[in-house]
Length: 206
Image (cartoon, rainbow, N blue to C red; front, side, top):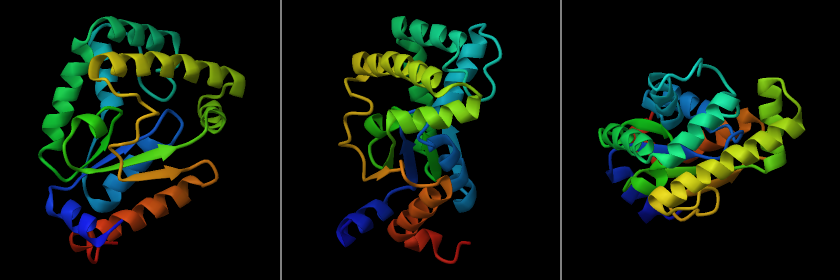
């Protein structure tokens, strides 16, 4: 990244968007970065789960709910009613514009002007392996669940906003392949990048 681009980013309110498909580690890393740098944290997935609870869906807590039958039913319902996602994205944009926040979101990199945007890349097989371990299921079952979920999700965003999740990388300042990196290594890389881009803000921070 050029020095000029670094200075341009640093002038704006601090907003960092972490994006990546399920199993890329984006949510865990976003929370860790928010904690390290004393920033707010906002998750589009958590906001959608809260909305699902309001709509009468069952226990949405914990990992793996989106891959469950109830999670898939809610995805299908979202596909028929744009208001669900539009309401969540409006709230995320309002939160983001206050600054000093890490956003864990599939939409903000495309909808938000400004901010530093990171895409975590990982192969379907690697992501399925992580999800299988996390949710105590077979890799084959995890891979099938991910493919079905991501097909629904991509269709929702393509119809609603016109971007191709997982295919359009134009908004991103950094694309990091995590396939052969441990979570701790990905975290270290992202910390080095943020420390470099926002050195004036993070000077002396442990």
